[in-house]
Image 1 (cartoon, one colour):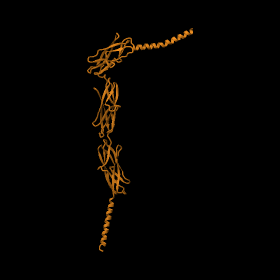
Image 2 (spheres, rainbow, N blue to C red):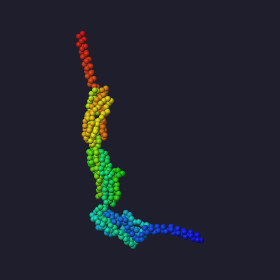
Image 3 (cartoon, one colour):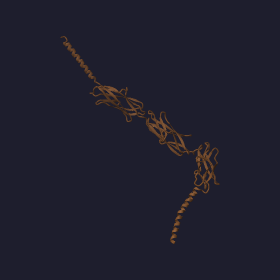
Image 4 (cartoon, rainbow, N blue to C red):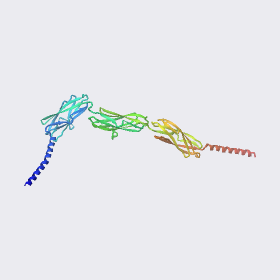
Length: 391
């Protein structure tokens, strides 16, 4: 019998030990969701607002029993407008009670001419025979609304003329409102410019939520013949009355380009065996940057010789031209006919080449030899006629 009573006592103690924490948890939950009296609270009872802006106080309303709670506000300054909102509507009351969490807010519209200073308001909640007040403070400040900024990652970039350069610009919205921005960019005449949201090609608008930032890609391409120098590029973001801008600098270091041609633009020449012939070549700097250390070379047929005057071009400014004289000496055993000589313009940044068809004429010495042979033949015939003609 004593053993039976011992087991019963132990079992009762275990049940009691398990039941007590559950009961305590249930009491805690009940006390959290069902207060003993009507309450109205807000997480931020004091806020700052900029003139011409709107501010909202989120309200948390709880009651011990399900009941309709009427809402009202006092102390709203003259010229301000106020409204209670919930579920997307303007409301006058909410239903509160166990298991109910009505979401409501007090919205205040502050006129643009409101003066700086603190304004005290009181929200009154009435329901279930109870009434409770919630004091609020709305402080008007010119700096309360925050600001919008545009900040480029790199304010200046260097590139060659005609090349595209890209800037990454951060658009920061530190205002309490979501804003939709129109994007635009300006720069020197003749440049190709664009300002687009990162990852959204061809888009010209950008939405930025309150307190967040977005990235803008700004690209700029200069004309191919633009002069060296620094050029400003400006990007603007506009949302209603809010407009911000940022300026970047593109430094053009000049483009490198040059062409090689003959003086008369004809790609043929004539030479004679046993003599030298000159060919005038023109080197033109068609870029926007000066060229230094230019040279001209040739690839002639075997055993031919080609020399140049001058042997090198020390400096050639943008848009300038110079004459290089090529002296061509064919091989002594070259036969009459057409040959090809390749002329090359060499520089570390640019190069160009042309092929000139060169016609070889027989040496004039053979002409003189032929004339001499003919003369000797005629002289011999004359001597024969004089000597034997009388017979």
